Image (tube, rainbow, N blue to C red):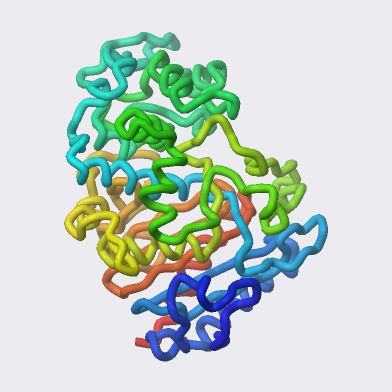
Length: 405
């Protein structure tokens, strides 16, 4: 780990001071294994490039940019590359909602129709004998349901059932709609499950984005910029990359190296009409590190407090209890809090970690996790949707394998 700032970032732009790995209990040899593994995956054409950042005890011990920014052009990856973070938007929007809770404008157990009346009287799709029957929802969706993905809403790409098909036909993901348009569309469609009964990854956080707009009277992008991004110094995070920064935008392979299918990611070069609270943002490793350190520090960073310590503790506790869900995302050993998956067992999980660790990732391959017990967070940015699950597991294991104390 160099003592100077990584290529592409001036020292004042770094989110935290730099430390030698040994000074924060990490092994240089272990971190070298991580670098070697990423370089190997890049060299064999498995990954286009990556930026990885590891911080412990308030200092950066590892910050590497590897491979190509744009594999089609061979441009080297800079440390300040801008990535489509997809669902890593969700933790940011979840903080926005909890800021409104702290403002006294909403309660976590408030029914959604209190703010978005179109969600009153929802129906639930029930398959019986090959037919779909619509039955009344037993209760309203709550704000907590949206935050923890027990709303009964769906994602159209998460299956081929009747509700997912209805989402596809209604074009719930179209970029030309407003956040209000999408919320109105979702409210007309049936739920997959009764609210509160099952964890189902969904467009819940998109609806939270609309909730923020209704309560605050501002667009989602404006609220996030004013209340979170600007105070934390996250200057490269937003719902698009401006033209002046297109040269820093990371791109994927044109063809997925495993499946052979064409890779198409979100167009983030122009300001969108739809500001997806569930998956529309771009960011950099350094910017997202600012968010992670704020959460690790109990809601404050560099003299700026976004949330109270008790709110952060509440968000990062398990909110599911016995509620279960899709095992590919709700993995063994983990529950779910308000915006992140939360580790509740020392064992069971397929990766190393600590009880209390919380994390999430994005469809194109980005990932982060925060480990309060070890005073650590790590961020990895890639644009490799087909490789995301495997590379995330390797990254997490190798970071923990580099612990020296």
